[in-house]
Length: 116
Image (cartoon, rainbow, N blue to C red; front, side, top):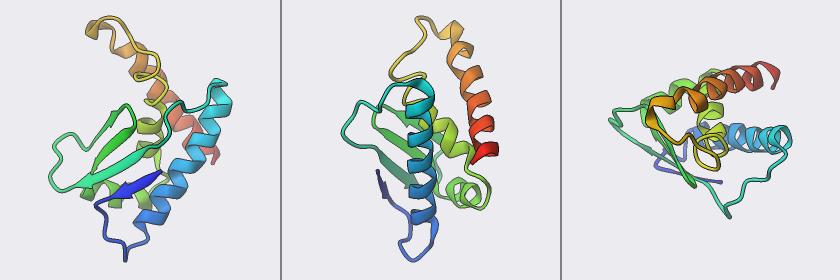
């Protein structure tokens, strides 16, 4: 896991890495499927309109949101990490059924954030 675009003087990088690694270990066990890609990049930028967006092997986050998130338990990180399995590895056939991947993702993000 590599984080790009965050001020390295801040503890945000280490906290983001810590959250992400913890969630990866948890969800590999939960789903019984290892993360299939050789790496994951977390890229932060200013003014990213969506707050966060997962892609196959990458997570894009807004700088403001990541700073606020790190102060919390990392529920947003968990949500984006879960999408490496639900939505990327396995996905719905039609966009009208997006709830099939989003509903369990929100639930699991809350669940893991409260446990860890």
